[in-house]
Image (cartoon, rainbow, N blue to C red):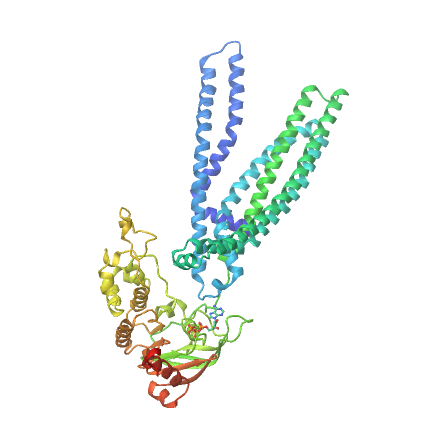
Length: 606
Ligand SMILES: Nc1ncnc2c1ncn2[C@@H]1O[C@H](COP(=O)(O)OP(=O)(O)OP(=O)(O)O)[C@@H](O)[C@H]1O
């Protein structure tokens, strides 16, 4: 927590709800002052009414003013409540938009795999976005309390300075203890961030339609619930431990306050007996001590809520101020249309310093306009090569060059506009069919012809055109579109292979990218569909720079160059015929697959 956090929180409130917060402060002040105004006006009215000769004009003014104060006093609390909720909503919206803008700014994937960052993100999203407004409300509460304390402490000071000093001193331990508790509570929220994320993960698994098949069939529900309950218990245990500490501390501090009040009462009574104080003074002391202690405890409570809000806001700031995950030059070079090719030059890569090398000195050229295929066993590092080409990570050593220029020197956004990829684990968006394709280039939403052309290339047009609302059909039964609200039965669930064709269409919606990457684009397709898709893709790729990854070697044999990756190194490369002639790893794998298709069924053997 720091002064900087405070100014940033206030800055966010000012930016999010500038008019509302001013109106809120003014109305809160009016609300706070109206009882005082009412008391004064009542006194004036009574005095004038009690005068010997009462004339209407003398009392009309105060009476009308009292009526106005009464009306204002009844309206203001409602207006204040509305303004408080509205300001909070606006500030939360701005704070949330900044979190997602910060997350979107990351060039690569690393922050999304870092548990420390993810914990912070969870806290920032859940508690951080509400904290700026808590700072304002708590701060106003503190100011209000301080004014009350000052007023009554002044009264005590007049009656006996030691009384004021004793009451104020008795509040110091409360303040310190509450601040320590607040720090402990904020630390507890930080410590349980991961447990909260796991709880959400299990909760989603238990009701997620994708997981429901396996969870039901394998009877894993009770097991997952037990894991979730363990996380909830962990969060509750941490909360309970802070609550118990709070109970012990606040209990003893309340007893201390009561003892101080009792001692002051005894002392005041004694002074009254000796004649130093009047009976009225004793009554005033009792009222003033109660008021000062009440106001002080509210100052402490509000102060603590500001303190806690600022500690939580610290996590929010850490997320929105997180340094770039990958370095971007202040004046990056333009990513020009590819003319020669992309080169991986002596690329070494591992996901973290304590992880094994995934790529060990890879040298690979993807010539412009040529089709390159990458093959290798599971875990060989093929998808990792794709991630480096898209600059989702930087090489640990070596470089990836775009026409000779290091990807690190290019504008990442421009680079990405030149690359399209169909990922192995493409996302099935719970949106319409058209949106699912247009995610590959959202400008295509305005040009349905492009969406349809991409769907045709991926061989999915007929399926989509035949849906109840064609391309506007929702591809989920979890949500319905705005137009379908009255008829929630219109969502459609596609098959695995149909989804895969759709994700291919998403990769093809941007016409003629400079690099097209297809990572296992046909794994879910039936033999006929696979053949058809590869034929279409083969035609589409002609003249394009492309990288195709597939375990089905029949699908890659047409590539200009086939590269075999093994143990993070390139062990062979050449055309299909060259590699077959070489009789190495590729030829062995190819023959193995081919013999699987050709060999007789077991009962026919012998
Ligand atoms: N985000 C990650 N963090 C840590 N290790 C990872 C990560 N992603 C992949 N790996 C590891 O890197 C290695 C290469 O993975 P990669 O996905 O590149 O292989 P692949 O050749 O595409 O495999 P497959 O044919 O199974 O798709 C594997 O050992 C994998 O465990």
